[in-house]
Length: 289
Image (cartoon, rainbow, N blue to C red):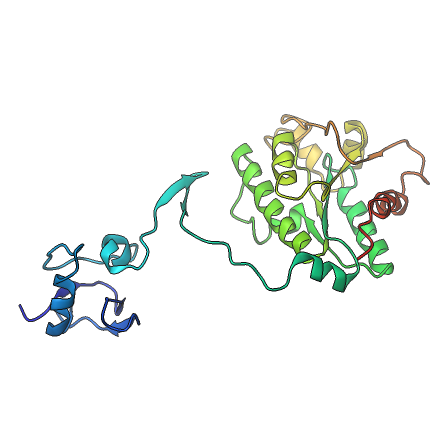
């Protein structure tokens, strides 16, 4: 045998071996499907203490040389299951030369997450839009993560089953955390019916940076509004697991802001509710650099 022959189903394969400069090099398999390494490289491989003699290996579309043969990789990734997914353990956080305080000083505001929760039809999205506009008029940078909007892209693969709802909230919480770290006031507007999921998002941020806003609107009021016609479908049994009908909504126990429906048009207007949130932000210093 003049060299090491590796069977590969891919059109080309990258490999890196000690003594070859550490750079990955491209080799294309011959007509018989074998990747042939030069004879001089055979000695390099054979001298490796972790080398296991082989004649050929099939590399599928789902596999890699580094996965099948740890000796051919600088770092062998150990993996564990997290929420049913594979997660690499030996990864290292890379610090930026620009810190959060620098970005907040530039924006003249402090990043945080305004998490608006409540039943469908309670006015979450309407208040979120009013809040974003009111802050924009004050020269403050915001971004709104609307529950429906996010399901058009990032979370389009998720259903409304309990486990998918949990994953939906987790993803949005992680994205909101990034916005807050940038120094942006992130407004998350979604039903988020379970306390444990909202608390999990709260735990992602520093103390005080998660502002939970509860749209305290009775079910009968939400159902009378029914802007999307969803309550009607749920009552007819055409939608299963609808929050407030056949799936529970767990109201916050210790939220920062409560926007209670009183029936008074002035106090319950979206603009006034937005101003109530802004008052909280001002008192906590989030509208200053």
